[in-house]
Length: 477
Image (tube, rainbow, N blue to C red; front, side, top):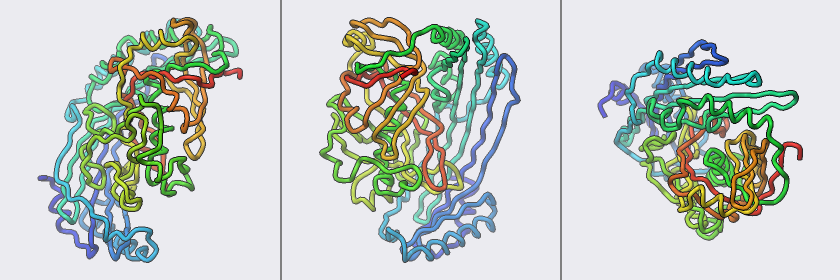
């Protein structure tokens, strides 16, 4: 890798057994039109570095926004002192952790695509104007955020990694009110449409013309009855499935959480190390993969932030739990295989075990076949609320939009559809998995975890799915 910072890294000095420099340079620009008024655009840049040192069996970190030789050497010296000071109390002897020495590069699709602000503003104005179709529409907004980033990793073992990203995060919503009832409808959720690439991200999701659609659906919800209460089948569309996957599969399978590291802040997990290889997490239809190789997905990369090469791995196969979401350090501590998911959300945080792209593999059922298979149930779309206990087991989720399914037919629109369950049994009720035609590649930019806190990008792809005997209730229940 030929980069101006290479020679600067090579001029630094450290007496640790291993050390690394990770440099992050990110730019973000946001455009928004709310209630037909263009909002002030925002532009930001964040640049800095973290150094990691292993010395005397301990590990130390230090971060700095001073990327001069003096600033980096000072950070390196501080990290070395921390590593030596913590060595006697470390739960891991870092001298026994084989750190990778990867060399390579990665680029998002359209990494160098220009940001045509005028054209994007025109698109946002058009969708904002299209949403104001009735006096009951009281709030509406079309927005987009574009982030570009360069991540560099240099290691004392010869690792040289450069990864360049371009993230697009569009958002569109309309809120309707009549008397005491207020309903909001979004396009796949607020920031749910987030991918790597350019303006084609908006085209893939039909952003053009969606202003009228979300407004129509918000108005329909105003006059809709409350979702009924009872035990019935539930057909979850992909923009709700991603939240279900995220909370009740992704977080429980993070290996550092299983080992107890997150107990003080983000909680523990109902999953224990002895479950891997034998535990029935779901029905035979459940196949879940860690896959950072899908080009457009939000958290795709070639190497994690420790430099471990990333590849697709099954976490759950035919319902059986196989592998946790654990990076190199957690794998060593737990003595079990994991994945390349040691990730940091910025230059001033160390890598920890994080979801990246966590996907539910497609099945063979069309949406029409899934609807026909349901005698009594509810189709639910787009997450609006969530609650889950600190072991990521008992949960309750609410959605923006619902439709009753009666005798194999979609019928009445219902508002405030909610459902609850238990992770350890919910996935075993999986009855049908949609085909690739029902699958969508979505994600979230707001996954929180860690002390100090880290808010990171996560991708999820899922087809529509049917679950049986689910506890369903409306907003009045």
